[in-house]
Image (cartoon, rainbow, N blue to C red; front, side, top):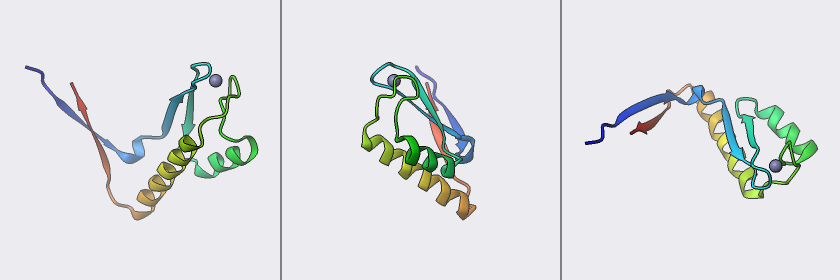
Length: 88
Ligand SMILES: [Zn+2]
């Protein structure tokens, strides 16, 4: 029998989103708690791999922007929100 232990993580413990570049495999990490900086970077350079400069799919950019907005709405609400992760 497999035992499951649930991990409970406050939303604001999650500071970074990482994703892998399809071109070179480099893992790109973004600090989602710094929305202003993210927006400025995207305006200047677009959303691209910092190693091979391959541009990421616009859907990825929209998804991250939506998540950053969600993060900021929760933060401003002062509501306690947790992610619940199952650990096998
Ligand atoms: Zn790359």
